[in-house]
Image (cartoon, rainbow, N blue to C red; front, side):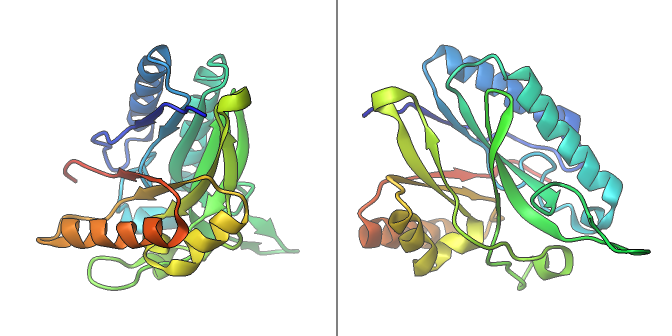
Length: 225
């Protein structure tokens, strides 16, 4: 089996959802003509990271949804291309849960898996860091379950196990993905720069690969904020 992958590590701008969406669209079109059938964006690529209290604004999350929908529409004609887009969301459906008089919001640090104009899978980050520069428990609810999706076509199709940032630092998630049928691990990440962290990060991912026997591709947010 053969699957060509593009890791779209672009300089996404915090709060510029239309601009970030256009960067993803342009990258996907270029990659597709080069034979790519799986494109990965980093964690929170659609809105930049960290957007801090902007995450608390419903209009901000809705703008992120609009940007993801724009990507899906613009790339719907690229047959066989699968994209993973890092984005915040309001629950799996992107909408709040309603009671008689109160709207209850569950925000997630999530990823949407797009294929030919359709969201084929949604996945919410399960482990939320809350130390140093991270304050994710203020903004997000942990997700549940495992996300394994298919990319490629026919005999070249590959089952991908998706992990989001902090979740890849634990042993269980990669193991569960493998048990669910994953043949490759895809990690999307937005860890900020820290002296010496690059080597530590590589060693941790190496442990996941050795423990599961699966190859891994890693998409990291880059650029300034």
